[in-house]
Image 1 (spheres, rainbow, N blue to C red):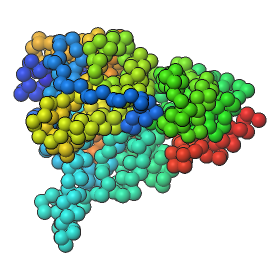
Image 2 (cartoon, helix red, strand yellow):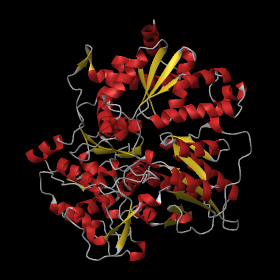
Image 3 (cartoon, rainbow, N blue to C red):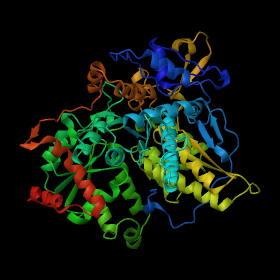
Length: 625
């Protein structure tokens, strides 16, 4: 049997409730990618709503771095490969007309929730509209939650379109598309009430939901530093009165963010600031507000994302001198080392000064790139538990069995996996970068193939393979984008296979009886770190155990508490607010929250003006004087 819901399986483990989908055959048996044990002490009784939700869910369910493109001609995308062998990676094949073919139990678990029941979507959308609730979610949510959120966004945009068409025709209602209460037709908000994006854009979208759709509360689905940052950005933009709720009352940690919160990171910053050279701290956006505030008090600091980190260090080096400026990058050790490797690849592959100016930065050449590379100081002890899992077992399989596949790698993955994608990117057969870069690359390749193959079914079918070198939760956004491209192009001859580089050592078998099912057939489960098993360091689970603390049931529960106003619910909602460690605090006489936001403001100005602010440059120069 197939355990339908990540959250339901988690609750079944502790005996709160059990749900088994009766229409799945044993051959397709699979379980959710991560199991997060929880006592789930919520302090209120919501069993009736829970039972209704369980019953309702039984239905059937780039920016590709231009700098790394080689002058050589890109190869023709590979044709459809032979059938997968037993020992190959799990994958999902996305075909025309929304066809999906999952290969392997891990992929089946990912694919099971991509088409949620309409009643679940309609019910939750109704609540979001009626209660004026917005949802900002990270790409790495579990697939059940993402499937519903994507469907809600699409449905809202459909209703908005119908509303606009009717208003153009002189009407005031929405002909069956919206409900009425007391004779007043409900309005569909103009800005999406649900967005799925990277951590920086979550705050921007929350602000837009407040300003354009007049939401009165935000649900932030991510880890704690994300809800903290969303709340701070909203406050900075005049929406500090709008509450931001996390999915759980528990601490939702992040191994990477927490690696910057100890004494070692502060000691590294202090030592860097005391050096002879001018020093600029470039801190990854995926850190807490406290880390950013403390860093700002020690050394001039600017945040970066995995999308803009390269352009940030290039511009900083240009403005303050590649030989004179030390770039202190942290806390992600893999990303920092990969940046050094990327710059080294530019030098070692013989890029000319002209190509560097054209493809990297107009004010750099081989000499300045070498100086920049040699003056990057990477924090040595920080990594993400997800990307840390792409080890040698995965690398060997990619090299041996997927030679013709496109390889994507987040900047946070270890050197071996990153190097494969980096080499591939030189011939436009791979990409290294952020989650958005990876998504854009896949979209571009599918669009190119659809144009080359053309419309109709007479041409030979072509299957593009993509190794997904980041968190598996991205697959929902990828599937939706590929389906949209194939639909819009009317192409019947292109397929995209999304391959999950999951080590067999990271997959374990459990008896169904262990999760409350009374038979002894075996499930294949990708274990979660929080479940006690850990993930194999030989090649990982590629799913974040912390992100999976966000689930669909939690969203329902929060919306229910908002809609069913009571003293108990109000007290419970207070426990869902983001951490507030800096409230009322000062550092060296400065407001701690303002200090924490300052590096983000510097990054915003850089993104807007394409240069570092004069204020930041002056701070760097004055500290070195």
